[in-house]
Amino acid sequence: MSDLIDLTAAQAAERIGAGEIDPAELFEAYRQRAAADELNAFTWVAEAPPTGDGRAQTPLKGVPIAAKDLFCTEGVPSQSGSRILEGYRPPYTATVIQKLADAGAPLLAKTNQDEFAMGSSNENSGFGPVLNPWDRRRVPGGSSGGSAAAVAAGLAPWAIGTDTGGSIRQPAALCGIVGLKPTYGACSRYGMIAFASSLDQAGPLTRDVTDAALILRNTIGRDPHDSTSLEFPGTIELPSAEDLKGIRLGVPEDLTGAEGGIEPGVMDNFKQTLALAQRLGASIEPCRLPHAPHALSAYYLIAPAEASANLARFDAVRYGLRVAGDEDLTTMYSRTREEGFGAEVKRRIMLGTYALSSGYYDAYYGTAQKVRTRIADDFRAAFERFDFIVTPTSPCTAFELGSKTDDPLAMYLNDFLAVPMSLAGIPAISIPSGLSDGLPVGFQLAGPAFSESRLIDAAYALERAIEFDGSPARG
Amino acid sequence: MLDKAQVLHVARLARLELSDDEVDRMAAELSHVLDHIEKIRELDLEGVPPTSHVVDVVNVLRADEPTPPLPREVILAAAPEPLNDGFGVPSPGAQ
Image 1 (cartoon, rainbow over the protein chains, first blue to last red):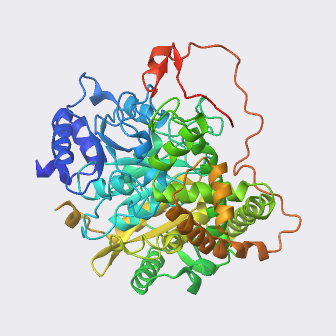
Image 2 (image 1 turned 120 degrees about the vertical axis):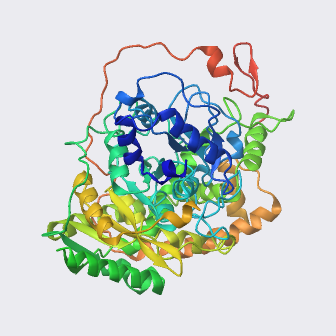
Image 3 (image 1 turned 90 degrees about the vertical axis):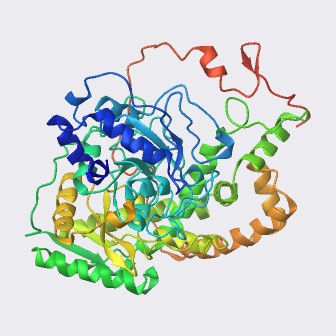
């Protein structure tokens, strides 16, 4: 059985296609590992393999997938990591989950996450923190921390998460796996329990770049249920590049300079990876993204503002928790929300409500949206000279549980290198680029909107040269 | 800086019944975060249009064709207090 777990999802699919593996056996192998999980990576695990034949004829061949808790899945708990939705079983399924199921990837499990995807450590989950499989005293990153830990530990072949300001890329980096945030609009948001609607995007967390391409290929496309989703121009090719000849990489000194607070070990690894890219034929030059250092501030106004509006729906009337009492309606709202939401969610609702409140709207939200325009302009200008912008994914490796929970601002600074791309709506991928003191480091490549195929190809060439060994995390 | 009165005002707008302890903590934490965020107000943004959407999407329309909604009982199954084929709530009271 350990042979099965050592396969990437694409390799497993190929073996199923060749008749060498039974998809039900693969499902059961992972199901048992997921059910015995000691990392708290899951909020729900399937009880049995799906019934029915014909999966061998589908593109994904029956290789099962884990999905972040916030994806609505019919009849399966979908709680977005929040006690206010504890036990909620939606009457419908999110588009990307349905697309994956239709493509032959049945649901294996739901993964733990920061509550409503707000966090960078998974410590904000209403269902307890997730442990990092590389070192269980440390966080897996967030908010898709359960997805990242599950894939890294070999408890799921692959996973789908969401990224609002780094929530796929940062946990992927901290757990030593691949994470891809697609162009905004590439994948439907229908059925994703919303955090910040102008930023939320679904994307893969996988063991390698090829697996990420396979998931993306099967989840993109316009959806009548999401008016911001788009018909993806072209197709997603599976990667094949062997080198980076002619590829121009820009290193934004505005992000990688002193202000980024990048740990020395992470910086060393980043420079080694750049040297490797150069040996593969890439040219590397510094570039400017003058407004990118302000992305974090803009993000922490825009995302909480949108969250405060999105989370207004939790009113104890139609679904979720109700704190009972014979008081009036407003008191019921206020008490339910006080009890049902965790500390970070309340903090963001407060921040967002304040930023949108009368007298402050222009100064905060309006200003942040102008900064957002500037950041997108900076990237557009940079992409005239460069194919991709590269940075470390996270300023630090996995940190110890509890070490940043008392300082919200210190926690937010984890997102410094990830939020500029989110605000610009452009795709970015994190690949594992080595270890620093025994902990994984992520290397981030970002490209123009809809450049996913090229981005994946470049990441693949680098991945082959890096030869990262993720097996220690699978135990 | 946010003082206690502002925190209570915002909490009322957000329908959060914060405890006294939370009000104090929130005032300190939000002030700390806002001090950092305030820096963007020093940028010269004269004439910069605010972003309304990151990709060009104009007038997304769909055909106006009715489709059957989810059955009432399926929707009410998730409600904390289904009542007379609807959602039961406490009295709105004196607002």
